[in-house]
Image 1 (tube, rainbow, N blue to C red):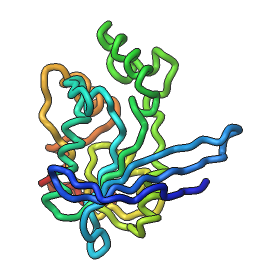
Image 2 (image 1 turned 45 degrees about the vertical axis):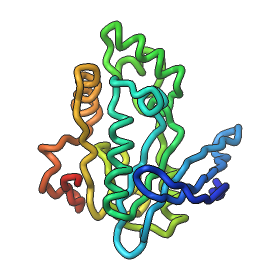
Image 3 (image 1 turned 30 degrees about the vertical axis):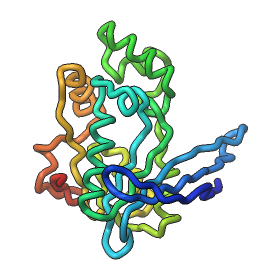
Image 4 (image 1 turned 60 degrees about the vertical axis):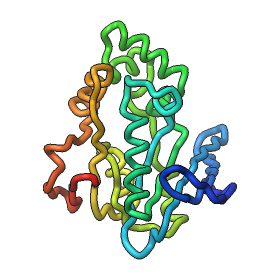
Length: 217
């Protein structure tokens, strides 16, 4: 596999003046070569101390149309706010819509959810794995940026495991908690109950496996 930087530009936003770096990775592990892409928003000094890092999967329905069915929009803007307030950090934005099944298949799972399936069983009903995402690309990007220790903003234990398995240090786990609403409550409870996502009460001031769990700012 090969990682290539495609572009590196100034990226002013309402939050802060970021750098936006585009990456492309070619994987030849399967019979057909596969190209993955990611956008990375960089701010400030990311080397003098472990930076805040958010690995975020694309969600058109939430981020473009502000759907209330998920927490993606709010978690994205939580990350941007925290990085801006800190004055330094990294947001890695991957194109892994619908936990890796793609936008149209995600919409098919929404149809099943309206019939009573939860987000896990809807994926399985369509013949998909529960979560097809792979975090090799974010790991390669962090290595490219010479970042070996991070303050990871996530509730997802799979992201924690992926970085630690790759030899990266998680100096701190920051909570990615956002408010629930009546449309997202079942989805969020399913992520906690069936996918093992961490919740606020079990992450504050708890230490496990060498990871410091701390409240977000």
